[in-house]
Image (cartoon, rainbow, N blue to C red; front, top):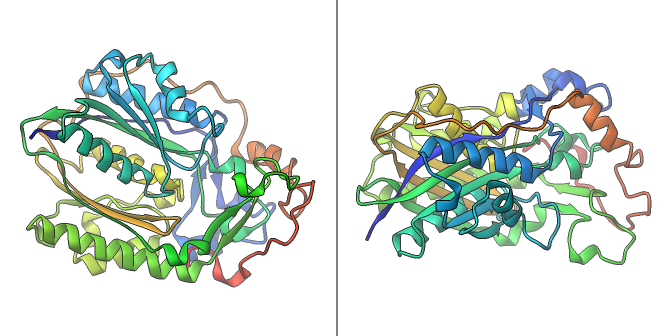
Length: 378
């Protein structure tokens, strides 16, 4: 049975940076308040669609792998950010890439979508269904953020990254996966206003209210990521000291530090990007992986642990054995469309479509906020 090696990687990050100081111009918050609770200093706001970010990331990953889009068998678009329910977003990436032979799948397990997608593509390669796949983690959260609620508005950012998987006889790529879901607590992280349950209630896409119970999320995040990490290491017969790098979901610095402690891995072996990009949901792990490669923190044969959690409450931990190559075979000329606006200007345009409380102008009746003191990821 073949393995599924990661042979290409690339990102599609928007250039506009939203700082904590920018947020304090319209929210009751400060740089100190945000950093103390989350470790975040900046996040990105996209001027283009999620499909465009995903396409740029995938194009760069394909060039890195030296693979032509026409040779792709599978595209997995992982994330919560879709242009529309039908058709799926993966097919939009397929058209933009010119990947005419590829099957196209959207996969949404919130922040764990990339890792669930990586597991799915690996299984499909190992069972012979496909040979070449691209897995994307992408989010455009700024478009449906409740910008009046500081508990969530300070946390999230936009971004995308992708990897290419190819069949190989070498024992590399994903060598172990643990997936799960603490569904009884699923209501602790919920975006109200998106989905069929709100049809006919005068609510349009982008008019949302967020339920975000930081204390519950923190507890489940640390437990889910830590337990899954322990299980995947045990299943693979690997000890914590054998792990070369941890590439975790970047939801909150305190969560990352707690998971590293429980896993028995020093923070020196953990890549942290939460201060630069915030929580990009499904994009945090692949963006951090691409950054780790650019910084030379991944070497041939490196053993990489990837834990994450997300809405649902889903959790995952993957163990990846890196292959021989850590440098790109080629580069892609594709880039995001030019941007002339600051992140604060982009956010201001979105806020102008919301009323002062972030609610639909048509009215969102009977929805509740989680108490102010229980946000910011715990």
